[in-house]
Image (cartoon, rainbow, N blue to C red; front, side):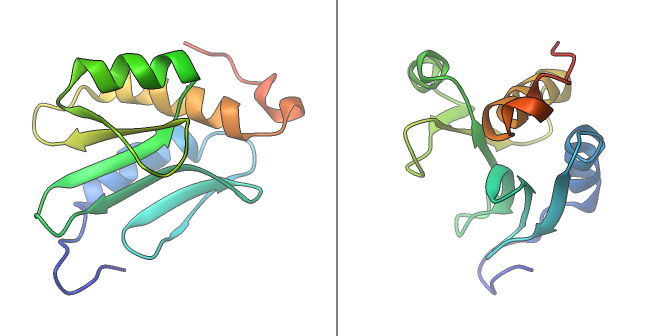
Amino acid sequence: MALADRPLVPEAWVRRVDAVLGALSRCAQEPAWTGTRWRVGGATVAHIFGGEDQVFRITFRGEPDEVAAFEHMGGPYFRSGWGGNAIGLVLDDDTDWDELAELLTDSYCIQAPPSLAEQVARP
């Protein structure tokens, strides 16, 4: 689902994210208020969406020290205002999808119950 002034995320990008997160136990893809999100239980692992500025973004969770580091790195990373451990990344043709896969796996491990997170082989 997309709002009228927000672009739809390219389906290939949604599939790339789902290939990582959909493979993790009990992590489910679902429509969000805009774009698509992945959740484990009631916790959001990642949210991909097009912004009103026509830029595509994904938000996910990170450890507190990582959030600060990514915020200070600057573009394509940004600090999301959706909580103290949320990281954002602008998606474009130069996105490093291998790095993003590692970050998404970490996000899952942060959000998932410990019994599920400990089953994950982290990169």
